[in-house]
Length: 107
Length: 122
Image 1 (spheres, each protein chain N blue to C red):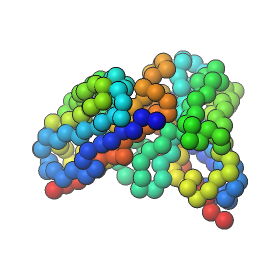
Image 2: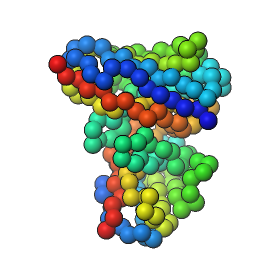
Image 3: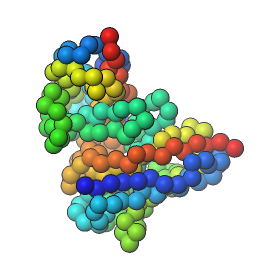
């Protein structure tokens, strides 16, 4: 299985901050990576797919970059609604696997 | 806008079979070339992909669960289902059904059900 490792596990920030979440794959996954946002008690929602493509309707403050084994989710200016958990997921090879999650908390 | 809804028993006894159904509305499960998946999440933990089914009935499973899992589709009812045998407490989780974001083999999850909690306990 491809292991996905996110860092940090928890991130403390303030409204308006620019933050980066990193996801590393144990082997190359080309650009077959997605980012999800999960609010408490809710299903995840896809933000970014194919490493850098934004799903329609996702605020422009969310962007993704990277390829191969290292990827980044950037939130350019944190809004109150963004203090939740984020997951990366590879869909390059079976089984599809997720990172362990990064929780963005209010500093 | 497609919508998915999981249903099934919330409590299953150890060693028994967990059975869940995902009902799709807002579109036909057999239209298009989407994959339909099951994913689970133990309380306070991360996400685990269980497996998926194509509209043709072809399936892919997580090898860690493959020996215990069957995913099937009923196009007449616009549903797909999950059966997991020989469950233990480790199978206690919120179970989600999901549809692929777009057509094709390599695709993330675009639409999700709200999730259903399944507890394995005697």
